[in-house]
Structures are given as C-alpha cells and as structure tokens.
Image (cartoon, rainbow, N blue to C red):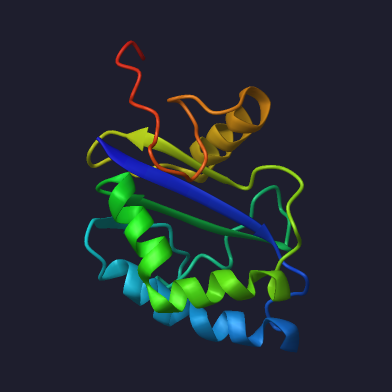
Length: 152
C-alpha cells in the first residue's frame, strides 16, 4: 500500500496578483524537489505537466489543489518537514492563503499503482470532515492509522 494526500488552500488573491508572486515562484522548485524525493510516486498535474494550479474543485477559482502519492507516510513527512523550499513556503502560507476553519488536508491508503482522482480525494476529505479520523481518511500526523483490512 501507498499513501495519497490532498491539500486544498483558499488563496487570498488570484495567482497573477502581486501578493501571490513569491508563492508562484516557489511552485516549480518545490514540485521538482518533491518529484526527486525518496518515496515520491506521483503528483496531480494540469496540462502544463509542472503543477496543478489550473485544476479546480467545485469551480472555485480561489481554491488551489495539491495531490500526490508517496511510498509511505514517513517519506511524505520527510519531504513536508525537511525540504527547505517546502518548509519556507509553509512558514509563509499565512501571506498567501486564508486560515482554514475546517480540515483542508487528508491522507488515505491506496493500492500500489493507483492514481486517485480528484473526486476520490474530495470524497476522502468530506469523509474526514464529517466523521473524523479513521483508516479511510485521516489528517497529516504520524503515526497514521493502520489500514482496515476488512475494507471491501
């Protein structure tokens, strides 16, 4: 099994606004670092192949999407907490994104080789919001729930 993650964030301004310039400039280097990281498997990308900034959830132009698959939760955590460009972006997220009032990040187990759809990811996020953490959908923190082997 591998781990999938969805991270949504509501931008304070459109991507072409000067407020977002540093964030936009960091996207390609951070995505390239993720792609080269140990345990990285796959990342959702738009037609550009380098990012997902044109992909929309619920036709919301202010909601930005990041979705990826990793070999293990530990590999994902090592990137999130250890890659300098990503850590720098996390520290500055308040400059670019609204403070979330509900969960905007979800992780879930996927079969090796499975590439989740955005609809699948949103369903997992909604499940987390409605039901709390479980092996079906859980927040980003270690240790993660073990996979429920009774799943269909």
